[in-house]
Length: 158
Image 1 (cartoon, rainbow, N blue to C red):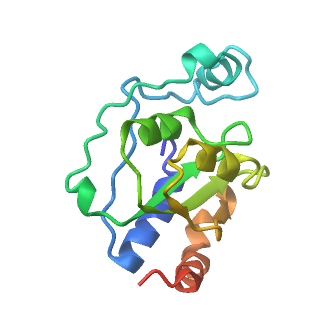
Image 2: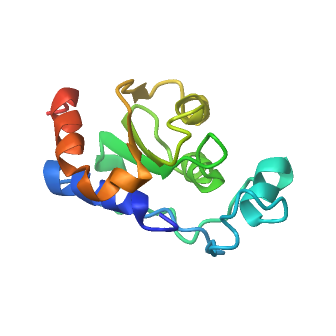
């Protein structure tokens, strides 16, 4: 979470279901200037516009005990009406075959946009993607704990 927004929701999920956290960290971290999607020269704009820049190198993709996880929550902010390229790099570098995938998104006014479709298209076909996806509006993240907990209860993952 470049700004900590998605991390807040992830922490609520981890606290509620007893999950472990793993942060997807680009080898070259994003700065606030990099995140300015209204600037055509910003890093996120260049990654969005140039397919050759979309494979974002990650600092670490080795998750301890990865094979033991049956369910993986993937959280991300809405960038360019999709997900950050680093999320797609993480999916590409980790074997998610046979796992249940639960998506959650933080966003401004763009909502989920095409993020669910884009992530689902990148996942192995033998994943089970839960279609109940929560989107948390960025200004409401600090007060979203009850809504996130209610969403988790609806998932019936246990």
